[in-house]
Image (cartoon, rainbow, N blue to C red; front, side, top):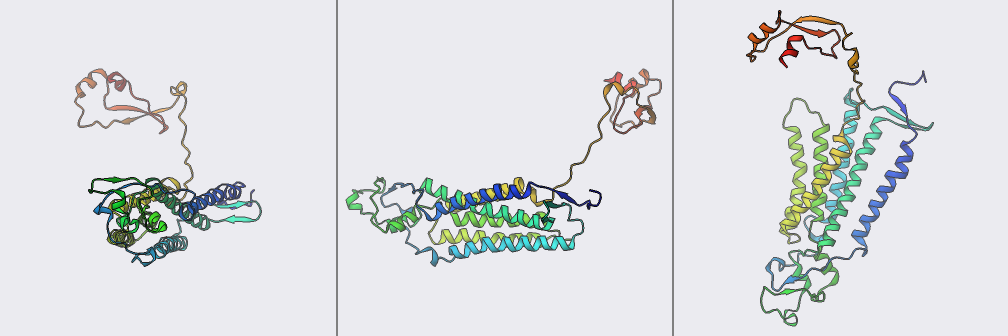
Length: 345
């Protein structure tokens, strides 16, 4: 292929791997997230409660759509902001930085060309989408398994304390039929730990902040990137504050959501997309000559620089006729110590 450009390489596996591996995994993740969110495939664990427990007796704040941070707003922000940020960053870097295009254009067959810009955008947005659904699965799985109640659980549960025989606040109720309220609201009030909205907000913010920190190169300003990153972290923090202020989650639920989303984002950035860096070609190392050929390596005599910390100068002068000379090979890859050095060892 004498006529091929040096920045082009062929690959017949990129399209089959994308279609039969990445797409299949992504589809399975989406289906699993759907079953956790909208289906009754995984029933919620029914956890008991103490009579007259003040930690779960907060007033009912109303449906999620009436919140100051409704799910529609949260899902829109975690989808739009990272997508626009990655698109703007990749387009800017592609057209303004001449040394950015280190990856080669891949030709798959005779029809498909994948340049570095397209590959990076698909890679970063694809991994982000996968992490978004993964965060949803982790949060929903934690809620289903634990069944921890929200602060307003008793307000929607409406237990009949007389029928349950509650005489004091230390009595534990484990009856699954203790709640007489709306079953839909009761089931939703059992999904508190971890906070899904906090997990998604933290995941989106950490992923975007790491992208800006590692990819954006802003010269002449030390506060531009930190200010932008803090501005992206503020909405995630406010989502957690709103969830607690409206008695929809406890602080422990919000903190667990922050840790879950942040951990998934950090793992994907560092281990999957390799800190958003281009793949560097492997450097070739010069092999060392075999030991039996060390004697035939030409050597040259150079002045030896003595360290001021050495305190054995007198011993060296006694054992070597000329301690100021060291013998080095002519090739920089092999070092042959002098006889005086060997005697010291």
